[in-house]
Every structure is written in structure tokens, then in C-alpha cells.
Image (cartoon, rainbow, N blue to C red; front, side):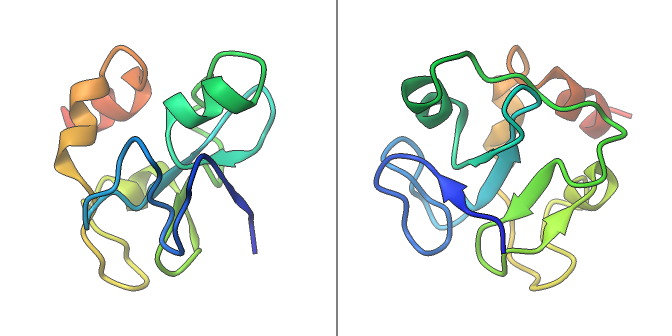
Length: 107
């Protein structure tokens, strides 16, 4: 089971920066290949800026609730295909940091 890194991370991957019921999407950094609760946690802990993984990466996203890894296509559903938990639709607001994800949602 992949580890969820971050600051004050709860059992579902929520952190001190994002902690609503739907803040359960955990992203993998292309540079260090580790999963973080959010880009802010990553940047504070990793020693380098968060870098989104390539769209073809087989495991770019982790559901914090059930800990299954997801493809971008599965993430686009807006909920986890394994446990059904909804993802935060406001993640789309971070288009400058997650342009790959934004492009997928806007297709």
C-alpha cells in the first residue's frame, strides 16, 4: 500500500491544507515518485517543487479512502471507481499546477 506523505495527514489523505470530506485525492510527483496529500505539503517537505506526472503514467492518483491507485481516466470520473467516494471538484481550480488534469476534465 503506497504511503501518503504530507502534513497532519489523516487516514483518508486529508492534510492541514485541504481537509474537507472530499479532499481525498493524493497525487504522485513526477520528480520523486512519491504520493502527497497536496502540492503544498509536497513543496514544504520534499525539497523541490511538485511536478505533475505524465498523462500516460499508470498510477498518477491515489484514492485516500481505499488506497487504490487510479489512472487519469479513472480520476476523471469525479469519484473513486473502487469505493465510490467523491473527489473535490474544486481541484480543477489549480489549473496552473495541474494542467494535465485540467485538460482531461475539459475534454
